[in-house]
Image 1 (spheres, rainbow, N blue to C red):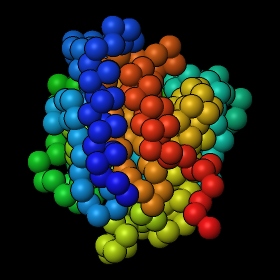
Image 2 (cartoon, rainbow, N blue to C red):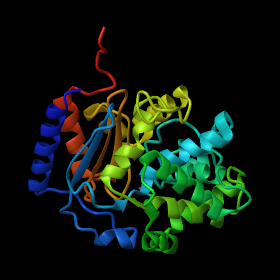
Image 3 (cartoon, protein in one colour):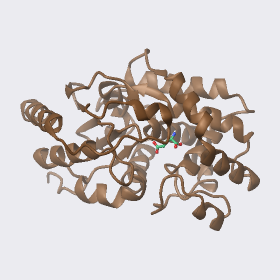
Image 4 (cartoon, rainbow, N blue to C red):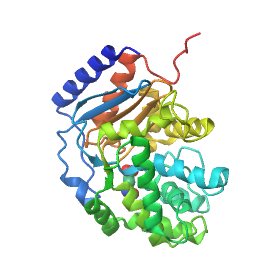
Length: 314
Ligand code: GLU
């Protein structure tokens, strides 16, 4: 991997994004997120030898929101393995992230682990006997471990803001409880869910956290195994097909990489065997994905020749 080429690409893309005037709109349905300055943009990428290159506001912590769903999915698969799929599907939803219609039609089993309903069901799967604190510790410990940074923490004001206004999520959780798709008290599952969505991380921390997905379940090509190879590949497959709400097809078309976005404006994207990338810009497009984050990843993938559909070296 040519670091110079990547360094130049990241630096130039960050400069272009800083100059963009059309930056999308920050999410306002979680009151705490409405106050974030849309003028920010950060990017970080970790390569196979562990080199981390970054530009822009790559050290600024933001609310990772739905990007956390990749990590909770990893933990739920660790806990339940394939039994998780009795509770959650693996198909793109084609509906907004918080849609309730599909859930009723499909008897409380959410389409995939990345829409809200699916992520709440996944969170419930890592919650034992309503013990929310223990589940949150497990999530934070995992994130601190994979990112190699013990300072990662929950932004309490964002968590409180979501708990106070997440009426739709309460409806989803109660509905799933009525079908026994979730087993703990809906309030407890949501407590964990709101808190893990409110974890604050920088692009640098997030890019490091994604390494195990770039290297088949290991933090680098020669590192110790954290999760089975097949599991890492399957999580990537779900990120590619379902990671961007009902903009997943467009993201796969434009960027060609597994990615997971969050309404805080962050995106984690994986180039299997090559890099783990995090971008952040708070302004969102019409389907709730970071507008400049998506654009930056499209440009970076093109400049570097990165795509999961690229012809591999013979
Ligand atoms: N915590 C947010 C919610 O449940 C997550 C939304 C997102 O990033 O997609 O509404």
